[in-house]
Amino acid sequence: METPFQSDPAKTPQEMRGDATRRVALSLLVILTGVGVYFILFRAPQRTATQRTAHLEFGPQEQAYAPNLHVGNFAMKQAENFLK
Image (cartoon, rainbow, N blue to C red; front, side, top):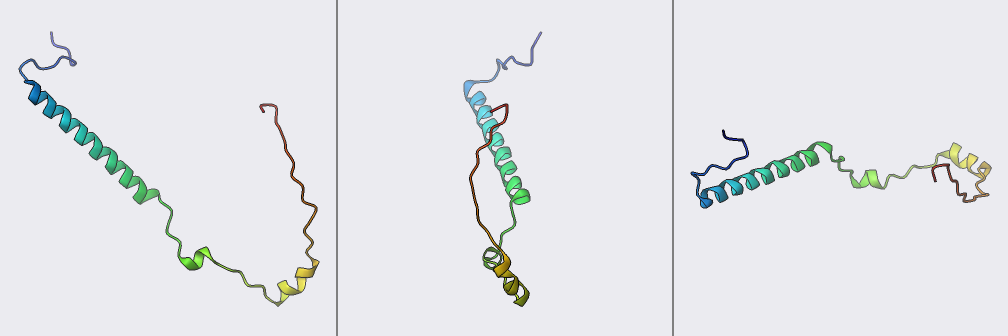
């Protein structure tokens, strides 16, 4: 009775080495194809230079309100939960 894990005794070592080479090449091809598909489908869209350096302009209403904004009293705090 033959098991699926037995090697074919009729094959020579050169034939077996060729099979292993084909398996490795096919595995690499599948992996590289998967990586390529991932980068094509899931990469972030390219941003243009104007999108990276977008500057919002202050209009007259914003400039009139700017003196009323007060920012200060910053403090860094450290918190810890029960799980540490």
